Structures are given as structure tokens and as C-alpha cells.
Length: 448
Image 1: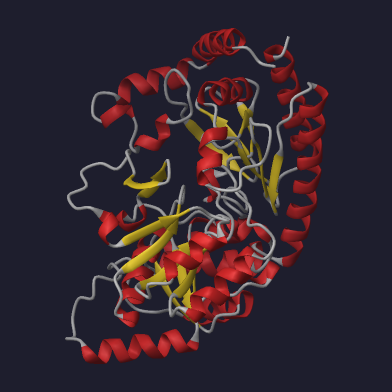
Image 2: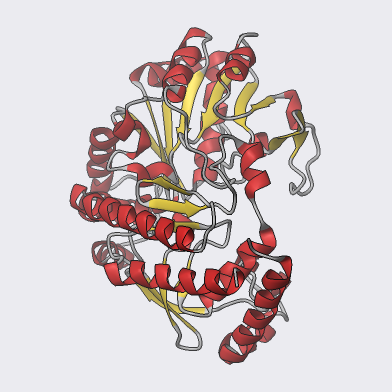
């Protein structure tokens, strides 16, 4: 067992250790406070639990150096944005080459032909569009689904995350839908057009679709942002069948579950969506996202466009599919996100999960390790969650903060949101061993 006293003591001692070891980051934090709200250019940079923000100096492969010269084994990898390593050489070369030729034309380049062929072959969907972020892609997909079906309702799952898309910020609390409490400045009630149920609840899924008013089911094949929640056997297959039966379009947001395998979760495990969204890592860290769709959906899109007035559709921005992003995506898809890279990532992630389980068991803790391809997470609870409610109940904020601080102070970064880790093609066996050793030290102190 881990006492609250031990957690509090670790947080206090690790915050003091961090402050002493990072004078350059402290100085930059003070300087940035003058004009950056919260002292950082984006507020998520405050979520690491450190007494002041940690400032990065550079990163390469699976390593990162901070402003004070400390070197980290990076298992966060930009919260998936750099899932295939920081600045993969083919992507870095493509960016440098394209930077001399122009960054944005609002015209296609030769890269578009190569990228389209790669996406269709890899993910099994014939037609694609490019946006700047997965949030933008999800907004576009929701609009298309509503337009195609003539229905207003979107079905999401408790604890889901699909970027900064208003429609999905609905949770279940004690079984009652409510707007997510963290959402700022919301002016209308999304519950009028968004239905939310628990993941892995087949009866709830069928009941939610039965009225025939759902335009789309929007989900990750495995939930990854409320902790990791894996689908029960047969659940996604049943979801596919029910969506078809009730006339709803099935959308998989694979921005995180691209870790599952070369073709994402859907191609690795076989359940095919009508539309597919992939963000952050697809261009090696350059802001870019894509969404793909079936030939039937493409035909419905064209019929919809023909019935409307030409002009702004509410879909896309001027920088969507800019030349720089397309060059980076071509390099990433053809030279970085390869079968060989996945083979290495998945094998090393298997070893990471095994070592985490061994370390946790050696301290008499019942914590499970959940594992989706190159992504792994240990959960500070007695069993792996089956839905969003169970995942939230498993979260232990203070304990997780103590562990994260301990790891940071010893040169290991994992995602600041719960206990998620990624293995990249550049990650080494030595880094996996180091993570396990530092976690072992941490749990030894917490359980003494």
C-alpha cells in the first residue's frame, strides 16, 4: 500500500529537487511571465506538475535536452506528435528542401499524388482530405456526416477526446449526461445534439442508435485520453454492424491508436470505419492531419455539395494541405512510418510492458499495465477500466504527480496526462531499462 504521507513527502522533496536543478528554466519562466499568459505560449505546457515550466532546448530521436542541459529518455514524444521520433532525418530533410521552395501556395504539389497513394494503400480507404489538426479533421467529419445523413445527433463515449471539438465535450456523471466541466465559454447545450454512452456497453450502444437520429458514431477504437480503455472482444465488430443497421456513419479517430500497427487499429484488427481521422504524428510533428472515407461516402459528399450554394462550407482553412506539411507527410509516410519501424516499436513496447509489470509486482502492487501496440500505460488501480467512468475512478492525481516528478528529476519523461508511454523507432533497449529502473526506485520509496 502507498500512504498519502509518502505521496506528499515525495511531491515536496521532488519539487525542491527540481527547483534546485533547473535554474535556467526558472529564469526563462520568470521572463515569460511578463507577456505569456500563465508564463507559457500554450497552457498545456503547465501540466507537467513541476513548480515552474520545464523549457526544452532541443530533441532528437527519443531523447530531449532541457535549457539546463539535462538529458531525458523521452516516452512522451510530444504527446504523440513525435511518436516516430523527434525530427526524423527524412522529415527534417524534406522540411529544409521545401522551405526553400515556398511554404504555402493553396495549390497542390507532386507530394499530393504520393501521399494519397500511401494513405489509400495503408488504411484501405480510397479518398482523402488534409487539414491542419485532428480537431479540424473531426469538425469536418462531423459536418459531412450531418450533411450526408440529414441527422443532427453525434454519438460519443464517456471520457472521449477528439481535440477541441465542442460537440464531443459531453460526459456521463452517475449515468447522467452533462457538459464537460472543463469547457470554457460554452454558449449552448451540446446535449441537444450529442448523445453520450459508456464504452464497451453493447446494450447502451444499441439503445442509443435505435431512434434513428444519429448521424455518426465518433470514437477511438480504444479510448486513450481518459486512461487507456481497450475494447472488449467483439465490441467493435458489433459497433460496425449496428451502425450500418441504423444508418449511422462510423468514424474512427486513430490519432493515438495509430500506435496499434502499420495500418492503425482498424487495419491491424479488422474493423473498418466509414471515415478515418489521423492527426499529430502523420507529418512527423509538423501540424497536419488527414481524414479518409469510403467511395460511398465520397459520392454522398458530392451529392450534398451539388444541392448547396457554392462558397464557404465551414470545412477547411487556408493553410490546410500547405506545401510544407505535404512534403513532411510524404517523407514520414514513405520513409519513417514503415513496416520495419513498426516491427521494432511493437517488439520493444512488449518488453516495456513486461518490465513494467515485473517492477509493479515486485512492490506488491495490483496495478495493471494496458498495452496498445507501441503505447503502454500503468494504471494505479486494481483492474483495468472497461469504460470512462471506471477510468476516471482509477485516476489518482497526487500519486501520479509524485511519480511523474520523480521520473523527470531522473531524466525520464512520460506523458503528463495519467501514466502513458510511447515507444518510437528511435527508442532504445537501454531507455526502456532506465525507465523500469527509475520506476522501481520510485515505488520503493512510496511503499516503504
